[in-house]
Image (tube, rainbow, N blue to C red; front, side, top):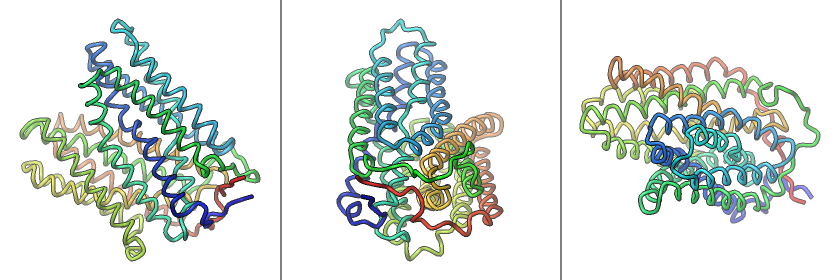
Length: 407
C-alpha cells in the first residue's frame, strides 16, 4: 500500500516524531568537528595536525555526500543510513580509544573515514518532509522549522563535546559522539516513514543524476555563494573580537548570529503563508547579502556587531527553507536525496573557501575585508538566482517527486 504525501498517517504526531528523531540523530554531527579537533590536538600536541584531521573529515564528507545520496535514491534509506552510522561510529570509537603514541597519519586517515561514511541524514530528512506536510503550500514553512530546529544542535553540540572532554576525556567525547550517532540514526531509520520509503522504480536513471536539471545546478551555485558568506562571516567576527577585546568575545557574538537564524525560522514557520510574497529567493538572498555586508560598519563596536548579526542571522533559515523547497520541486524523479546531498557539498565547500579567503584578507587588510567578501558573495548569489530564474519556473508538481511508500 502506498501512502501519499497528504496522508494523515504521516502528518500530526507521527510527522513530529520523525522530525524529532532526525534532530536527535544529527546532534552528534554538530559535535564532531570540535571533538576531533581537541582530541587530535591532545594526542599529537599539534594544532596543525588537528586542523588537518578536521579538514580531512569535512572534505571527504563533502565529496561522499552526493554519492551516498544517489545510493539512497536507488536502494532506499535503511541500508545506507545504518551502514554509514555503523562505520562512522566504529571509526570514532577507535579514534577515541587509541593510545597517545598513535601516528598522526592514522588519526588523519580515521578522520577522513568518518567523512566518507557519514550517513546522509539531512538529505534523507528533507526527502521525507514533503510526506508529512498537510498541504504542499506549507512545505517552505516546514523546511524553515527543520532548519530552525537544526540550529539548536549547532548551539548545543560544540559545548556538549567540550564539556565531555573537560569532565571525562577528549577520547570519551569521540566515543560518546559515535554511540549517539549510531543510536540516533537507528531510531530515525526505524521510523515508519524512513523505513518504508521506497526508491522511484520507474524513474529514468542517468549518470548526471540530479545535475541534469538546470534548476538544481543553479541552486547548487547559489548555495555555494551562501556558504562563502557564512565562512567569511565566521572568520570576520572572530578576527574582530580578537582585535577588540579577545577571541573569547567571538562566542557570544556567534551565538547571537545563531539566535537570529532561530528567530527567522520561527517567523517563517508561523507566518510563512502571509509572507509568501516576501519569500522569493532573490529577495531573501539580497537581504542576506546586505545584512552580512553591513557588518563592515560595526568592526569598532561589538555591541553594534551583535545587533547586526541577529538581523543577518534572521535571513538564514528563511533562505534555506526556500532553497530546500525548490530542490524538492525541481529534482528529477528518483534523484531527490542526491539533490539535497549536493546542497550539503556546495555549502560545505563554500564555507571552506569563504573561511580560507577571509583569513587571507583579514591578515592582509583587516577584519572588515571579511565582511566585504561576505557581502559580495551574497550579492553574486542573488544575481545568480535572478539570472537562473528562467530555470526555476515553471516547476513540476510536488506530488510527482520521490513518493514515500509504506508496505
